[in-house]
Length: 263
Ligand SMILES: [Zn+2]
Image 1: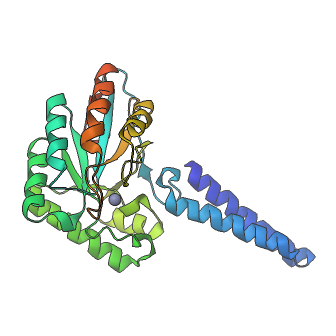
Image 2: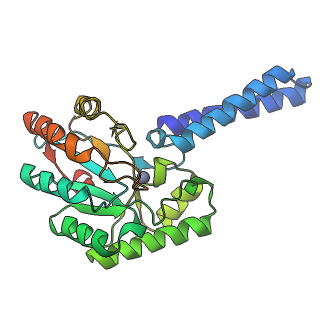
Image 3: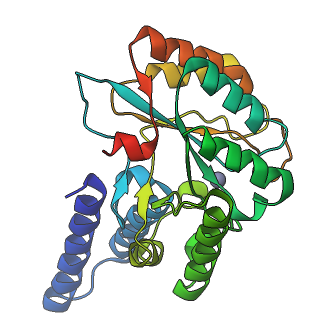
């Protein structure tokens, strides 16, 4: 039982209890009803917005430590980017580290496809971050969610020749519909244990590196961005990666793909 699910069950039991009480002993005061409603909605919203709670879906956020062979899975979302992903690949190659790229299917055309092919050939995992990166993905019905994921999986397979089983939902929002469709398609949902907060304009490289390095422990999954989702800012990945890779080396942490991390 995850913390998120325990929270959801507890709130549901609480809501049912309040309902039963008002049936047995007359209506509750309005402020109590409003408070209970607000509390319950907040719990559900938190579950949608925060994949680390694993409220609606089994999301892998980290792996058990392996003291004999400590390792970290660096993951890059929203790519590929013609401007920055090649540099990220160069830095990973120099450090002898592997990583996982959660790519946006619609970006796998032309040069984008060639970059992803290069990543796959270099031993990195190319995984699914949806086709359209619809920011309202968590509000879509099952048919729309399925169509998007099937399209993304098919374009990734066309480009790399491999079918990925790893999926990170756009913006990290999860709900029962996304969880069900992912399961039907044989996808494992991947969250993160360390969030760099680098996927935005104005991210300060030194701050990002400090934040990530603090969380670099055996079994961690680190959320980074090798591209801006809408190409509207310059990602800091090439600037922050040397510091992160150096800290990993210092701590004896190998850089592995999420597939390798999960064994
Ligand atoms: Zn994204």
